[in-house]
Length: 182
Image (cartoon, rainbow, N blue to C red; front, side, top):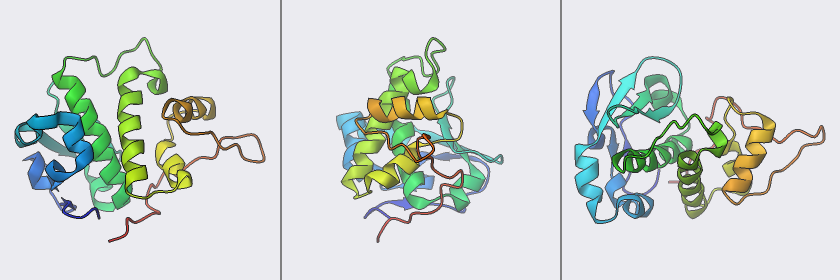
């Protein structure tokens, strides 16, 4: 894991203070860049709610709480989980600024709030040493098409790699393959 960061992967389904589940994120440069001098204050007020269904992470549009799939918390790839937390913290900032997180005028990959969050996560992925192939794998989620994936890659400054069949190469749904070096 990233030095100084701990993720409580055995948390039960409840509401928690952010730091009870995600420790040390207040020291991560990417997080400090998101919130600036207010980092400690924002994270100390942030709540995390675990839910039992399969999924990933999201920010509740009413409360700003980070919603976390307990199965993903327990079994998901550590690096992807780390990057997802960074991504969702961008959405927390956007929520606090009053931005519309789920603006239906845009498709998921064209939504300005998603592009910003994916850019921050992509930059952090590069900082911690992920290859472009691993970053592409992280960015490819099962609910977007190949064309949308190619647009997302361009939006975050990456080239789309097209496979022999003409498809943009996809990441597996498990998101469990790569483990961050200690």
